[in-house]
Image 1 (cartoon, rainbow, N blue to C red):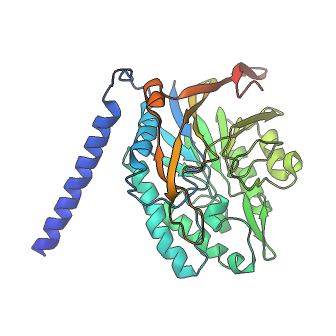
Image 2 (cartoon, one colour; image 1 turned 180 degrees about the horizontal axis):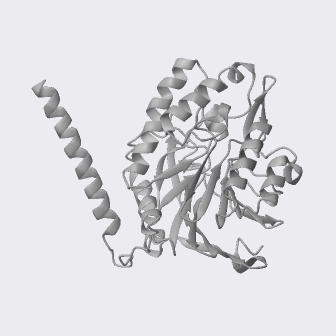
Image 3 (cartoon, rainbow, N blue to C red; image 1 turned 180 degrees about the vertical axis):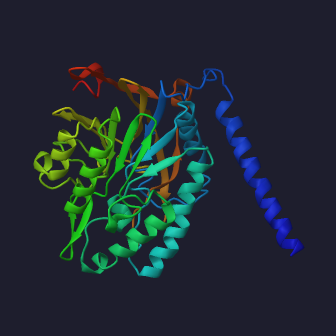
Length: 373
C-alpha cells in the first residue's frame, strides 16, 4: 500500500509539473514574439476557437517527433484565451472494426490520449462525431453492425453533455454559454442497415425544440462533421456531404431559426459559404498528410451584438515513414514539424468576417480573404 501511495503521489507531482512547464513554455517570448495580454472573458467579449479533424489519425500520446509541433499549435490557441474549443469530428483514425473489444481497447488508448493533450493546456472542449469515430467510410455490413459500439465508446470516453435526443445521448447535445447557444449534431444516421450522411428526424425534432427554447439567445452556432453547401475544395478527403444539401431538413431548420454559423470539417481545406444568413465554415486539417501542407483554425470573438471571425493558418512539414494505424497501410507521416520561419512570423490571418446583429437583421462586415471569395 505504501508503494502504491508513493506511485500515486509521484504521478500527481508529474501532472503538476507537466502543467506548470506547459504554461511556462506557452508564455516564454522569443526574439520575434511578445507575451500576449489575455482577452477579457466577460459577457461583453469572450472567445472560442474551432479546429475540426484534429488529428484525423490515431496518434500515440506522446509521439516525440510530433510533440513540438503540437505544443506550438496549442500555444497559439492558448494565446487566444478561449472559453472553450470546438472540434467537429475526426479526432482519431478509428479503423477499429476488428471486434467490439477492439473498439473498446483502441478507444481507451486514443480518445484518452487525445483528451490528455487538450487538457494539458487547460482547454475546455466540445466535440462532434466524424466518420472516423464510426470506423471511417465506407461502411460495408461488417462495419455497420459495429456502429452502436463505435457510438457508445465515443460517448463514454469523450463525456459530452447528455441532453440530446434519446438515441444520441453524448453524440448530439447543446450548450448555452453566456450569450451563445452551441448545438452539436451527428451527421451520420444508421437506417435500414446503411449509414446515411444526414441529420435524421429525431435530431431535427430535438434541434427544433432547443432552438425554440433558446430563441432569445443572441448568437447561435451549430457544429457537425459533414458540410451541406457546395461545391467545395478538398485535400485528402472522402468528400462526404449531407444528403439533399440546402434542401435538407437540417439546413432549412438552421435558416428558419436564424443560426449564425455551421462549423464543419471533412474536406481539410478552408471553404466559407453563406446562404440565407447562415455561414457554413469548412475548415480544419488532416495532420501528417503530405497533401495537406497547411493547418488552420478559426477564432471567434463574441460580443453582445456581433461575432468577429478570424481564420488563421500556418504551414506544416511532414517527413519520414508512415506511422502505424490499425487497418491502414498508410497512416500519417512519422515526423511533423513547423518551419522556423512560421514560428517567428506566427499564424497568418487568411480571412476575417464580422456578423453584426442589428434591429433589422444581420450585416456581414469586414469581409476579407476566405470570407470574401
